[in-house]
Structure formats: structure tokens, C-alpha cells
Image (cartoon, rainbow, N blue to C red; front, side, top):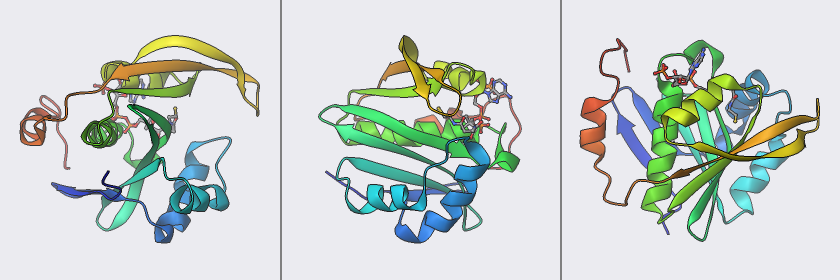
Length: 178
Ligand SMILES: CC(C)(COP(=O)(O)OP(=O)(O)OC[C@H]1O[C@@H](n2cnc3c(N)ncnc32)[C@H](O)[C@@H]1OP(=O)(O)O)[C@@H](O)C(=O)NCCC(=O)NCCS
């Protein structure tokens, strides 16, 4: 299995996260989540968890988003996905999700799953757009407010997914600078 990833797409670079990224990731993590992961949690993921894959989305040399997953047998479990607040609403979260789904597919994963707060309609809408469907809830999953998690699943595209075709049709009908 290939543990490292790097792809340039217009002004964006998608690449594997390293320990050097953790200070930037902590900023995005705290901007994005009410239960942010600690530096140690990320360090442990990057150094000890052989199932873990973390992808950085970089613009002008700075991380503006990231996504992570655990790849187990043929299922990818998304651990987190976030875009810096100032960059949201420009289809960058969708690009990031596309990339991690593509990576999972390249690693031989057949399905992808994740948990999302039942109140997080923005993320649910993004996931729905990418083919994720609800498959149940985990009661009281989030410890800060005892909120339920919606469990979602999606099939992944085949390993022969054609990036060039996907790039040429992405973002049609919507102006963007990426
Ligand atoms: C969820 C998140 C990654 C989405 O990233 P984004 O770059 O803002 O989203 P995009 O611009 O790529 O939008 C993709 C789709 O998401 C949905 N979406 C995005 N912003 C939305 C909004 N303000 N209201 C409703 N739906 C929205 C839409 O379905 C959109 O597709 P469309 O524009 O064609 O309708 C981002 O909002 C984020 O980092 N949130 C905080 C962290 C978080 O909640 N992560 C998910 C944890 S499970």
C-alpha cells in the first residue's frame, strides 16, 4: 500500500500530512470543531497508527484544509475533514473530499463511512452530494453536548477513476479561482 500522496491540481496541492504540519492543523482544528483533537492525537495518528492516512490541502504553500481516514480491509473510515473558515463555500471541501475518496479508492477501499453531528447540515449536504447515505445514528456520540452522530456510507469509485476527466468537469457553472 502507498502511504504517501502528492498531487498538484491548479493552485492547490494535495499531499500527505507530516509532523511539521501539526501547528497549522491545530489552528484549523480549533477553528472548526468544538471538540478539537490535541497535538498528541495527531502525532499519534501520524507515527503509530498504520491504518491512518491524512491529506493536507495547500494553497500558496499554506494548509487550508485537511482530511483523514483509517483504511481497514476494504473500508475507509473518515476521521475528520475541515476547511479554514475563510476558504469555505468555494467547493474546496468538495475537492478535498474528492481527493480522499480517490486516495481510498486507489488503496483498494470499496466503501467509505463517517460520523457527522445530526445538526451539521452543511457537512451532511456535502456528503449527500458525494453519494453518502444515512445508515443509522450513534446516540450521544459527542461528549460536549451529548449530540447524536449520523452514520453515513458511500460506495467508492473504481480504482480506474480518471482524474483528468473529473478535473475538466469539476466546478462547471460556478466561478472559482482554484
Ligand atoms: C464541512 C466543510 C468541510 C465543507 O467545506 P466547504 O468548502 O465549505 O464546502 P463546499 O464549498 O465544498 O460545498 C460543498 C457542498 O457542501 C454543502 N454546503 C457548503 N456550504 C454550505 C452552506 N453554507 N449551507 C448548506 N450547504 C452547504 C453544499 O451541498 C455544497 O455543494 P453546492 O455548493 O453545490 O450546493 C466545512 O464547512 C468545514 O470545514 N466545516 C467545519 C468542520 C466540519 O464540520 N467538518 C465535518 C465534520 S463531520
